[in-house]
Image (cartoon, rainbow, N blue to C red; front, side):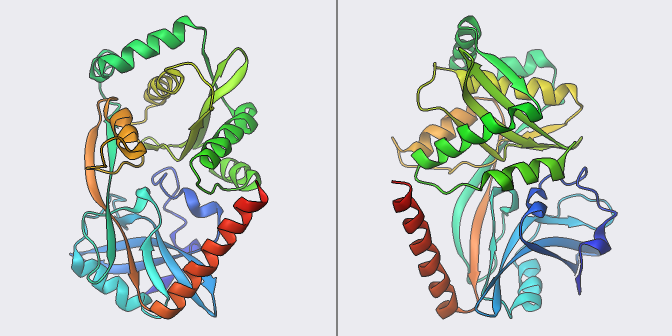
Length: 310
């Protein structure tokens, strides 16, 4: 049973901060009877060649309680029957990763670290790795300042974009970034670390009383050691003060190759003392020809844009 977003208007973003992509693209809710409940799943639709590629924006949740639903292959089979007319169905981001995957899908192991903000500040501090605590103190001694608010939007975006470009990844536009911030307000916060009045790290955090998500962020190419550590520590303390119960550090790759940037990112997030939750990102292809055509065109456009940027 397909329905519109208005039909689900009584499910506020406050309860589901992972619905951060509502500000971009066309979206549709599906209601799936599952295990004596009504599972709600939000999909983003991208039109291509008269059809669509569907992406799971956020994990399925119960219509009544709002709690995440633990799915199995049966659930994905039910959803696949509903959307089999599409080119493909996939998990869009780490906010929609799952422990189960559809039969016949291509998958990649993924995980995230959950940090329990209901703990006392002293316990949160002790859970940090000693190296994190040391570089946080170092950044504080250097005079690194953490600021937050809408006035930090330009600086946070510039740091994020530059960081993405260095990594060879695409980024959303400044207008999308700004539009998303204003649509999510007041359930979003921007933080920036400044050193000698220059922005050296930043992050974009949607949140609710239930949880917060590290959605966008980055660091400057030239920065003192520990600025991002200090920024994230201040983020955790600030979110706790606002009554947020859990911080989702977004994405890591378990069992990353030694020496790779993924291993470094894993170690960095792990040292904040959170609980690792593992699952998969996946893609289920219904029309291989149109899907491969879409991927080829997308990669061509991405490479073309990178060549224009020099």
